Image (cartoon, rainbow, N blue to C red; front, top):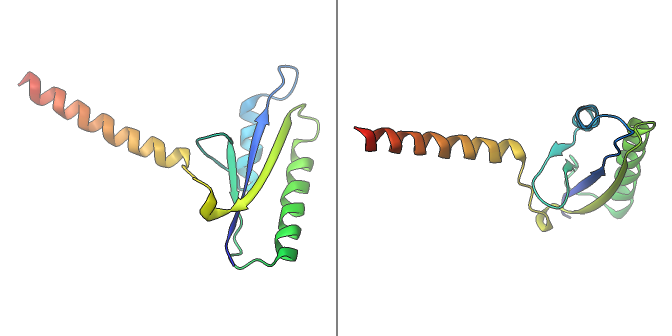
Length: 114
């Protein structure tokens, strides 16, 4: 059986909590920022999940998210899928790749000036 990932998309409200506070709370829950249609993803640790296990995990993470964001005046959507069906481009990985590319470009510019 496959492993699963729950993705969340957040809609902020200018009368609600700051985006930085919401992001901090999501990180504390174990969500990671990702690129794409969803803002964050939670990778379920258990790999071989039965339907009952998956349902329990979805309820657990949904309840935790709901409790954590209560009073923050934000809206969110959740989507849980098999991990193989989801492109999880973590922003940390993307930032590292961009940093590496920037270093290469800087070196090329330096070589051209010499």
